Image 1: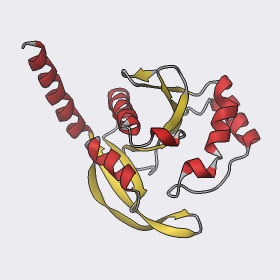
Image 2: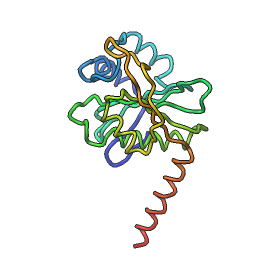
Image 3: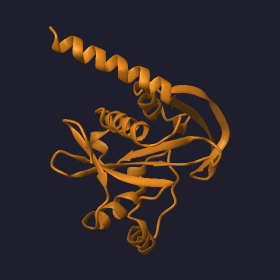
Length: 189
């Protein structure tokens, strides 16, 4: 489990499945920037039985509050076979929690975990060019805009352009070193 003082990121457990599936299939929660396809509850339960939503190439985790209430999901996956990279995606189920820094905290926790535990060189976040909230998350978490992929995703009956943001291992390491120095400076005061 990954955590800070506000949230935890943990694996989906069997007791979570019904709510996880219901919330994941609620198109009003998903918002206007994610695809509107529904997933069969039986298919999701079968997938959970087979791999617990955690494989070498894809992992789906829950974002929960300090009382273990499910507030969102965050996932990472190997998107391009020949890239030494993972892509991160996320959504908040609780609409009232949006704009409260929860996703940025979750991305920060997952970024630290992935660079610390996997031999990868880059993490990527892609978002609809109109999804300003998601773009703010990427920027706040130190991801750098690399470009725009035209017509890259099919959402709600049309192809949309997607921004690509990335963070390299070296950027993360430098950032981590700066944070460590700042923390030790604070402690010495």
